[in-house]
Length: 342
Ligand SMILES: O=c1ccn([C@@H]2O[C@H](COP(=O)(O)O)[C@@H](O)[C@H]2O)c(=O)[nH]1
Image 1: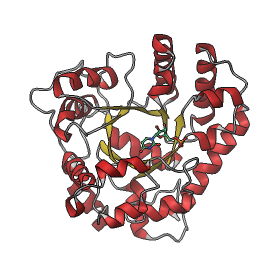
Image 2 (image 1 turned 180 degrees about the vertical axis):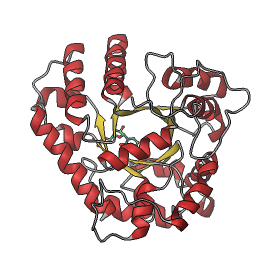
Image 3 (image 1 turned 180 degrees about the horizontal axis):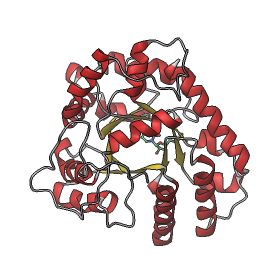
Image 4 (image 1 turned 45 degrees about the horizontal axis):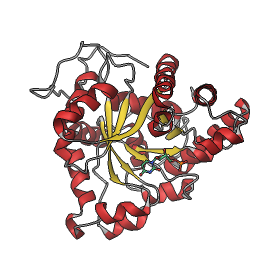
């Protein structure tokens, strides 16, 4: 993990103080997740590679359905993706399926990512009443936990404020959260699309935006004054739209959302305006679920610089050969770069 910077753990672009009442941690100095993610996206582009060791993929890779097979699969993905994608997202369920030995493999994966400097999103989709939520928060977001990741996915359907222990601990330890807002699966509509103009999804987006309120002023200032061109994505001389350049460089909050690349119709039906959204948007649905890079760009045209598009099976099917897998990751990253940043 890149533990650069000398800010107090959890500080974002502008000052923010740890929420009162949240547990104090060991005080490792770590730059805020939003800032670390922004840098990773500038350096490596908007691709998140999912580590989803499905039984069918283990078969396709010629690996046994054992803990050894799980480990070989996972570490191959880490090796192929490190330095070629902004983040890695292990799907926690597929490790839990192997019991405690599977979780030990996940601990190793998270540790290896940290050592390789790759940011992680533990896709655990946790959500519970506040007192239990505190234990989930400790597991995924505290410095001392063997399962600590850079960020974790959260389900707000016990009420957004039930997530408070995780939101606060993430801020204190310089980690991040991704809250489910509009998931990529069709069944999500029966909960998330309810409420018309005041849909459940819109309420979640508003709550997340409020969590990141301290980045708004900095973003506006950045857009008005102009900023350094992102030379990794837009080499000097590239004729790019200045707004896109600014979006790519704009500060990101550390609290993000999950919005599927498959929900374009819902975004317009529910009249959701993402223009001022100030956090990262993790977008599954690219690849195996049918959305291509242009579809991702179309869904998020107002906020392209905030998008982290996940592909799991779409790239994983190119393994087990390391160079074939890495090439697939690079191809996906390149097509997303072109589609989202022009
Ligand atoms: O709305 C959501 C939230 C999470 N996911 C997860 O992302 C990956 C997608 O895998 P693919 O193979 O690229 O389809 C998987 O881990 C899901 O649990 C999602 O798909 N949609």
